[in-house]
Image (cartoon, helix red, strand yellow):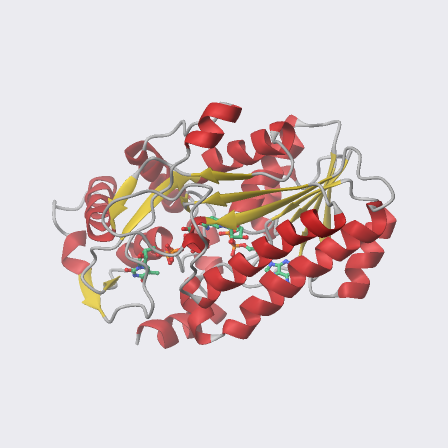
Amino acid sequence: MNVLITGGAGFIGSHVVRLFVENYPEYHIYNLDNLTYAGNLENLKDIERQSNYTFLKADITDETHINELFETYKFERVIHLAAESHVDRSITDPLAFVKTNVIGTMILLNSFKKLWSNNYEGKLFYHVSTDEVYGTLGVTGLFTENTSYDPNSPYSASKASSDHFVRAYGETYGIPYVITNCSNNYGQNQFPEKLIPLFINNILEEKPLPVYGDGNYTRDWLYVQDHAKAIDLVFHKCALGETYNIGGFNEWKNIDLVKLLCQQMDEKLNKPKGTSEQLITFVKDRPGHDLRYAIDASKINKELGWKPSVTFEEGLSKTIDWYLNNDEWLNHVTSGEYQTYYQTQYN
Ligand code: NAD
Ligand code: DAU
């Protein structure tokens, strides 16, 4: 089976590519990525020479190229992760998010339809989405698969739009699809613009830890390898045309999470207790900041038997260890463009 994974050089994509390459030697895995600032082939060094793996450098918004690749490689199943994924960047450059997340998804859908519309038997378009499409929760309640879409940021609006197009292509043209909406991921290889790796890097550099607003915003955190396992299960066992929510059953207020991170960093760096916490700095809030996300993952649990395997304390500790042991990776991604981004975002 020829499986196309888009965005496979990014954070979650690289874990999904590795899992599929290692666990399914009978599949050929094509990783399609145009290597934006967030894409990094160093994430896949350990598997790049496997015979069932091919990297394709391509932009999902390039219609001609994407059509050619579908014609050439006859991708039977697609796991679509490529996206602009950072909320703060979507606030400064929303159009980039529409281009990649909406138009890029449409182009993939069209190429898939063009190739297979005569017979969709055994084919699948798997769209990886986010819980942010549901908007924000108050202090209680959980997002279920039936929660109405109510996106608040340009990022979540673009992801919501792409979800709608996938579903519409299912209804209108009969494309076999599935969508998953997942909560906040963390783990190794995450680009240090997102909360956890940004704060790990700042602690290492003894820079302020910029907590937005009062820090009382809540997210549900899932270890990235547990997300990859859920994607594997959905890919093989899903009912077509369904949505599955994926979450960690693991809600944290940002400020509590940051304090736990500081504690673990102090221990690992042999610093006196409380050292890293002194770096916490409350800064101007993110516009349109969603108060709380929390996922009801009971559908995927009951129907497909998935549940997270890693506790947050354990996952966070493994994540920190990875960053401490991979300073070359961290130095590489925090040089160049990152410095300009950081100055603009935080000064
Ligand atoms: P990421 O930003 O780390 O990686 C995105 C990848 O997509 C990069 O490798 C990048 O080079 C590639 N890409 C971007 N634009 C492209 C284009 N035009 N053509 C080809 N490739 C392109 O993102 P991530 O955090 O790994 O997220 C992956 C997917 O999962 C996204 O669709 C995101 O919306 C979704 N998601 C992320 C999270 C999370 O917490 N990170 C949670 C739920 C869902
Ligand atoms: O919920 C899933 C989503 O999780 C994914 O779809 C997105 O791709 C992913 O980026 C993530 O979005 P968030 O906006 O929740 O993640 P981020 O790491 O940017 O922020 C987490 C929380 O921490 C959020 O409440 C904002 C806050 N924060 C973030 C940064 C970068 C800060 O307080 N300071 C910061 O510097």
